[in-house]
Image (tube, rainbow, N blue to C red):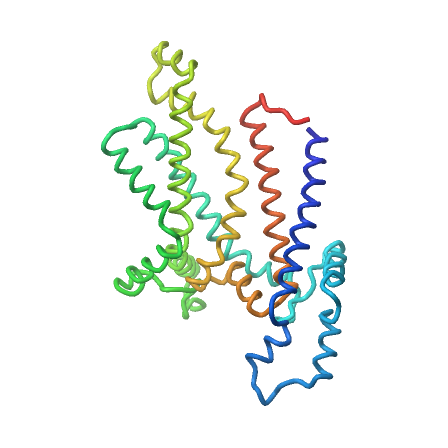
Length: 326
């Protein structure tokens, strides 16, 4: 197994190099630079001279061809330095560290909620298969899975924030957040996070519950399930102790990939809800052509995805001892 994971780490390192190389090439080929963007949105009377622009290009490394720029960035990463943000004038590590908390609040809450709800829902759908209630729930789940999250976000904002005024429209905190007690601050963040978490969760909930149901229906046709029925075991015992245990095997392969996909998919929803997370930061960095920040976020998303795949392999061997790696 050790040799297998060493190979996976080696392949992962090569994959990281290829991903970051391609992303760096793409962003350097985008129209505009950090300096031209600043001049475009700044005061026309305060435009910098050509000499100042060349001096800043040299200071930021923008005067070099992009392959050399990538090598400079990669050499800094090898020294555990992601560089400084060109637009915010602070280390990228500190910038990401400040934004990762709000994003994890949404994604981890969504991940936990997805598993807490989808597992019993999948078991219930299997036990009540082909009943009117099960078909109705399956149809609703299919409709939810087909509904884009950004469309649902807009409708939820209109209904609960604008029409009913039950929940905040956007942001993470209220204006008077600092004046609230500890419980009041926690409740305030909860209210602000409720709609984004719902939008993060419902699609995954629909997919996972249907995934569990389809795998359970395949498992319950196996011979050992018929043997368990012949022994007189209850339906609940058969589903939970025998069938579901084998359903976990394909299910865990999705665990390691869910969190990275949630992180990368947070860009649109965080923009809609004005949530101060990494998705919003990534969008802002793209608009500002903030190359170090874009590359830092890309590197983090890539590492999380590869680590998630490795975690899925490890969990796979834990759930099914028959699986060995060599």
